[in-house]
Image (cartoon, rainbow, N blue to C red; front, side, top):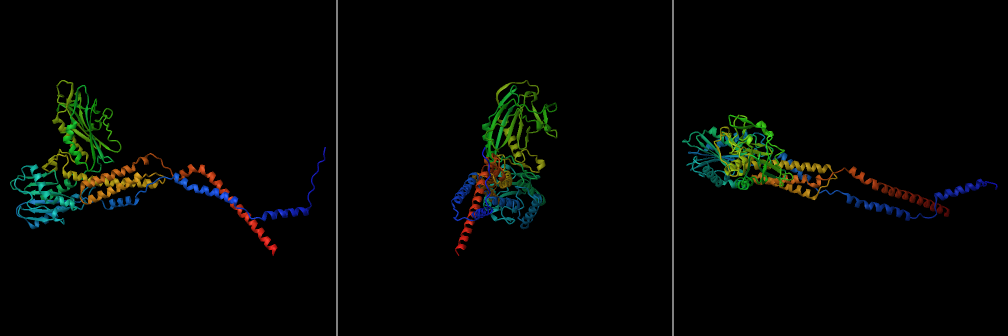
Length: 610
């Protein structure tokens, strides 16, 4: 076995010399450090940094710029300076013997009474506090006027209407006044920015018993009879404020309007046969629709795009119960039964394909009861039977119950096939539907109790809405649509600003821009008194704002915060970027250290040389 031996340790002096040499070698180097390694390391680092913009560009969210300042400006303008819808009212007294002081006295009294009736805070869509009043006293040969600060072209033309035969035929008087008033400069007033002109003509007649008040289908009314100055002021101001300004209601027509968010309304008419085993009825809807509904839809065009459809349904019993009443000889259902009348399980009314999206559907139903509950009548709270035998459901539509002539008390049940509603009956039903449509839009129906309104007669229009009623609707919808448009745009702006990662398509930006332009146009038309154009522009502004807010690109994507964005990509890029960064820092430190060694060696060589 070989002998194991250890190497002898070096002498102490030799060990010290070796240590000195290693220390000198670690602190000095005789050659200049190369940059190749540093260049390669920083090339990789710079290549990584140069790819970062491309990565951010590929993951960025497209956001079309929205005019936030314009939206805020429109909101402030509507809040502090509501849209002004100017109205001009003129009272004309046809009497003998003009009085120079009478016109000024009446003008001041009527303006003061109208201001009191209008109130300090007029509702949206009223004429506001900026209306003007003028009074003209016409004796047939001479006129005395107090224009109330309005241009002369808006005033009554002396001798425009003859005093003879003024109280005989209301329709003839209505057309005669309209012809005279249009020749008096009403059109020029609109073009000059004075708004629509509403007129009340007082025809003083000694041979007329009592006082007769008639409201025409245009923009005027007239009073026939002997009336005192105080009563004339009260009647004229009431007609101006309650009817021409507020549409026949003390507080206006209300806030809720049956128009869809996109400005469209679908009138769906349904004929329901409760029990086809008793009788089956059909109707000539298309022909009657052209006669009675086409003009109504055309008149309401500025505030809604109206489409009409119809259907006939069978096996549609009602949900509520009725009871037999011996006094009336019929089955009775009362107002407390109305909430349960519509049978949503059997009445399949929502079948329209044109009402998709945000359109509004108004249902109008003709209910033909079965033989076991026929005739079926609606009893009012006062115990009387409804004249129309129908009712409305706000924001839903209206229902009319039509009892077939076969359902008498002791008649035998007859099975009729292919029967058609008589044209006379169908015309009456459509008249009720038009009255219900008026009520759904906030107006009063055509069935007015004159004893309550103090008005002797209201002339109906063949369009279902008189000119002054359409003006009320146009003003109200213009104001309501502008406020709705601003609220929608403000909500959209807050939503976009609160979600930085939210996609805003260019189409949304265009819709917001066009909505603001339409709103500005509606305000301009409102200030000029062009009510129909203002309502049409405001409807377009509201529809565009709703389209922008409910754009599919907004509704279909879930948006996350910037923290979530980093949480997704950090696991992929953080390890690589961290290693590249640490390698670059480490290589830079190494290069500086080696360069310091070389500089120390060079300095020592220079000292030895000297």
